[in-house]
Length: 441
Image (tube, rainbow, N blue to C red; front, top):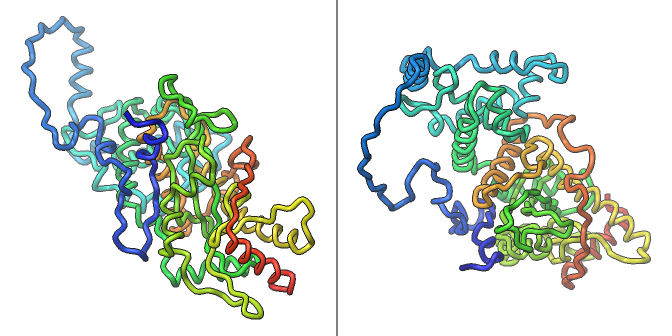
């Protein structure tokens, strides 16, 4: 039997799909395809043996109950029996003073996406979710669930973080239907939307670097990196110290690298919250690609008198200072130039913190304490929320101002200082500090 740490390594889900180096696999090797089958399907490579069923004596049923069972089992075949008027029914059932009066704003309030973006999401998963008789999902009235209603159910579950019972009541379906629909949607979007989470090509990287410099004054920066905790409760038999973080919560890490528009360029999840951030980084595929020069190895920039800086990302004090990962100065008596650098650095790094606040505010299933989640499936839930975050941005949809957390995305968690430094990282940080002192904008 594997140790808890080894088990968690197998479950870790590292998402980086670069356009640059070839030979990378998708999904990543640690991901077991068999984990993503429908609960109703037999395992891959195995044939389900037929068992002889014993004849059961049918118990007398009430006549009305028999009629009710017939109505539920009789899945309608005609197109008119598909539940297409779901939005009118849903909005009427869930109207309240807290919902915006404008219909488009109300739609986005419930599903985090405009109707145009919602339609695009439906187009991605339509072939996977379309209900076909006789096994199609139905509502309590016996009508087939349209793809649009299934997507709405899944988005509402992810956006609100409400229980399956509550979400089901809002749509007129049962708890089991919400569970099936949500998981089918997660499986489908995970496969169909992976092009929304890619490491940028060289032209896009140049654009990101230019925007970061225009906004924050530090040249040749390709992104901001940060982590957040997804908190959960675990059964006693699974509650090992590896999953217990330094705030005494059981949690799973999510690490993200973001561009200037708060778009995920890379994410890794699945690792226990009890790890240090520096260890999480070193176990990630992102670290390996950076260390081997497969990414963050583009054009260097000359600042002054031959001082050159390579491509890099910025991170907080929990990260090590590396040639490609620049952290703030840590000094008991910082100079004025150090303080000026740290100020610019913090503003740039806050892009990642703000992005996580948007992610957890928009998809509140990630911000609530998850009750005994399946740790094999949780990384997929997290990934799909990250994909939805990117889809909203890629579609030109605006992120609602009232959605992000007003406080920090990781309330109660303080950064823990990592003292690891590499000379080349210190040299690059020194060049950037001097650049600002010399009047670099």
